[in-house]
Length: 371
Image 1 (tube, rainbow, N blue to C red):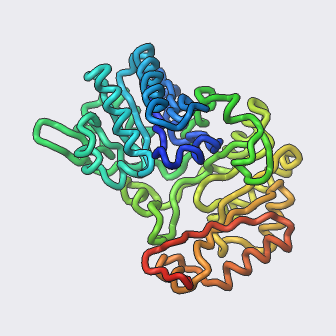
Image 2 (image 1 turned 180 degrees about the horizontal axis):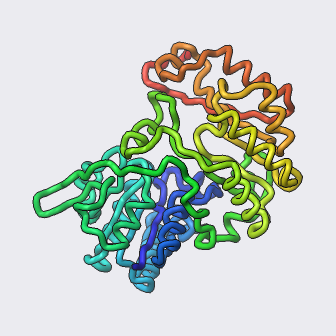
């Protein structure tokens, strides 16, 4: 079956930031490779790449619609899958209508953070969307592509003659190594694998992102990770093995000449032993001499010995989820951190010689100016 996966445009007020970002759509690329592995044809459309350097106005949006429609007309997909966070959802609705206007027989599927959080609202706001995928999409889209009846596909919310039906959660494997590498071949190689300073900020490298884990065991009140876990029958956190990760990194170096890498999952060091094994393999394989890398971390998930090993294996940047300089706000966030831990983590990074960023949330509900 022919499946077209679409990444919509972000809301127009944020176009500029979206257009300079070089983060590949790994979610769609994983789904694409999983479908290809199982014998289906896949195309990925990134509407921001179609927008390219056009002026940011309604005329350009119509141009992108025309280009999208032409690709769909030529490819003739039987399924269109659209991913969306909340800032992408209005363009996801626009794209769903565009697909249905071209061919009403196309099955339009919406997935990602926003449809997972609001499946019924998504279907109500966009009559052109037939199915919402809750949580991860690889197995769901494969079932659809294989022609399985909707009532037999777990993990979806869909329309039928009686209205909207919600199927049971989908059981997912405990580990991630069954997944093939993302379908990098379907992405714009010149765009994603040219030097950029948007992956490891401040360092202009041929860099990309990889995801080595899914899920998070914490329950921060601002984050959707817990909701995503509950949307499917799976462990809170599932990992790729260190061996799988090293093979993927080697693949990226050999095939795309990458020089930089961001481990893009929520917390790279959730398993200290696994982090140690990854770092040691990077050193043993000599990849630390070819690659600079960065990772997202919790301030309480690191120590001096771990940071030194990370540095020796090529880590040049850590991004710490400190979130606030106000203990009162941290408590409201249910972050399970205190200011002393945050300060200690930044100090450790500086002493180790690793560059450090911190993520900060401004305007959390209940905050005052002093916070």
